[in-house]
Length: 85
Image (cartoon, helix red, strand yellow):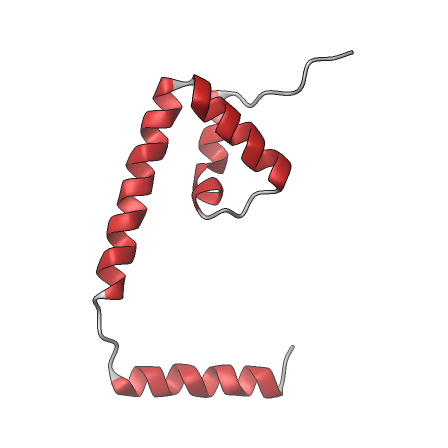
């Protein structure tokens, strides 16, 4: 019986953004989490990038988009729903 594949630091680093956005497969999420549990360097990078994303999301939530922009975005979304593809 072979040991399960474990991600290297390089493999985790390449997937960190997708891990933070929860865009990996369930198996990849588990492998990244397992690596972060055992690697202080990668865990520190994960925490840093997580804080940066949190601050960006917080700032973006406070920005008021101009009404004209919101109307244009809604119009484009409606057009896309009517004519997908």
